[in-house]
Length: 136
Image (cartoon, rainbow, N blue to C red; front, side, top):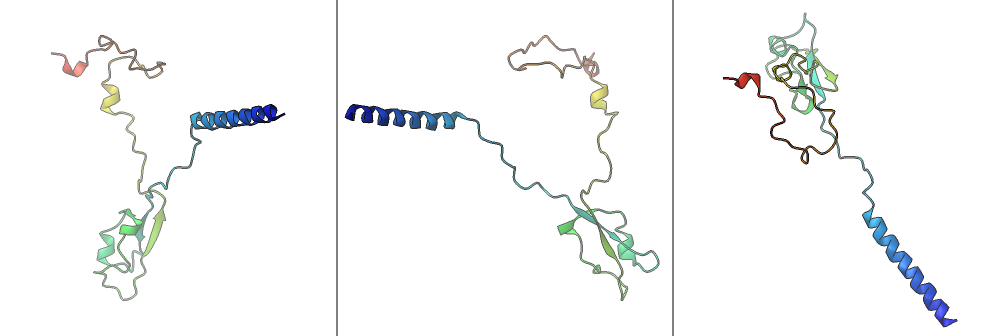
C-alpha cells in the first residue's frame, strides 16, 4: 500500500514539474502597451473686431497644449480679452504622404514586397537593377 502512495506522489510531482516547464515555454500573452504620446494641440481663436495685434500674429498656428501661451497674451493691449483656445486631437493639419514622391518614381525595378520568406536567407547580390540615376 505504501508503494502505491509513493508512486502516486511521484506521479503528481512529475506532472507538476511538467506543467511548470510547459507554461514557461508558452509565448507571453499580449498586453496593452504603455501610454501613447499625445499630440493634442490648440489654436488661439479670436474675434476679428476685438482682437489685438499679438494674437493676429499667431493665426493658424497649432501648438501642443502644454506649450501654448496663456491667455491673455503678455503683450495683449485689450482690457477685456475675448480670445479662446480651440482644441484638436492632432497637430497635423493635412495628409502628409506624397503620392508623387521621387523615391517611388525613381525605382526602376518591379514590385517585390509580396515575396514570401526570410529575405536574409534568399539574398542574391545579382538580384538588383542598376538605379537609373547612377548610370554613367
